[in-house]
Image 1 (cartoon, rainbow, N blue to C red):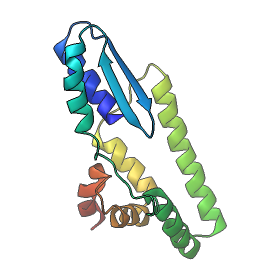
Image 2 (cartoon, helix red, strand yellow):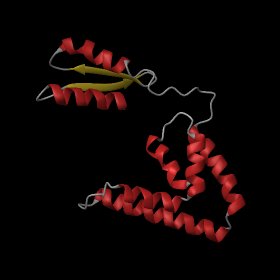
Image 3 (cartoon, helix red, strand yellow):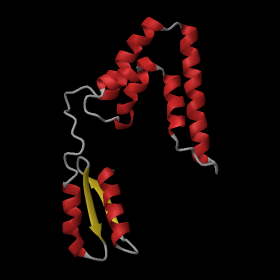
Image 4 (cartoon, helix red, strand yellow):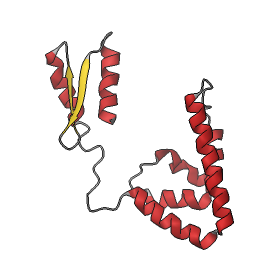
Amino acid sequence: MVAGHALLGYMTGTYEVPSISITHKDKGTLVAEYVEDKKLNKTFKRICDSFKDYYNQPVDDEAFEERYKRERVLQLKESEDFESLLNKVTNYELELLDYADRLLSDKPIPMDSMTAFGTLEKLGDESISLLQKLDVEGEYKGLAGYTEHLK
């Protein structure tokens, strides 16, 4: 998907009316062709090939999300009772519903850091600390600097 966005960005910046075909085949192989100019296929291949190692997760490794869920459940079992878990879940549901509503409505979503900080406060420091501890590959770059806020 990232390579597809890179290709579309390249086409949008290069041509007034891009006409490309982007398809996936085999095990996530991206195939892109410029319909009007076959000479650009080499450029597309170069762009696609540059993303080959963009995300390679060994099959044997447990997915990050699964590790986070497993460890977070253990934390919550130790620190929360049923009532507080219900409060956390309903707060999170309201946050997601508000976000979905703003995505689907004509109101723009505020793109300031205060919105992010409010969401992170609802999640709590334990959740953020665990995410940062488990994120050894740096997938959550936006939260990397949030450590200072926790101190």
